Image (cartoon, rainbow, N blue to C red; front, side, top):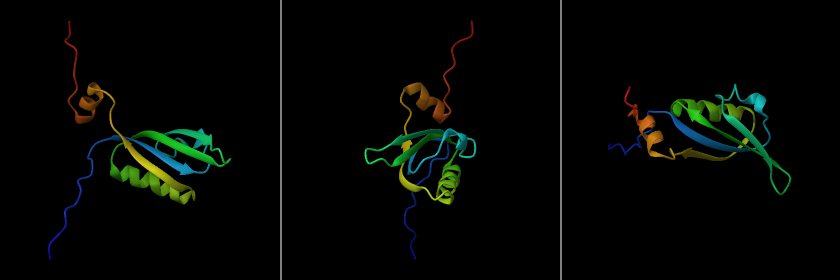
Length: 102
């Protein structure tokens, strides 16, 4: 029996943007891994909440999604955000750039 390829999960922190159908206010932030919470009203009048923040690994992402599920919030999207500049990419990879001490 052959085993299929398994995608490699990131082993380092990553920034995620998670959107759910429903409304959460900022008081939920601490319980939800200190994510930034932004709630907007859609054109049809329904509230949609976006959570954005860094999670240390896939296990933390799974835990956060379970909490949202337990709150009975319908998941709209989960997006992993890439660093926006070279210094952020290096910091994510552990290759910190230090200024020379003078």
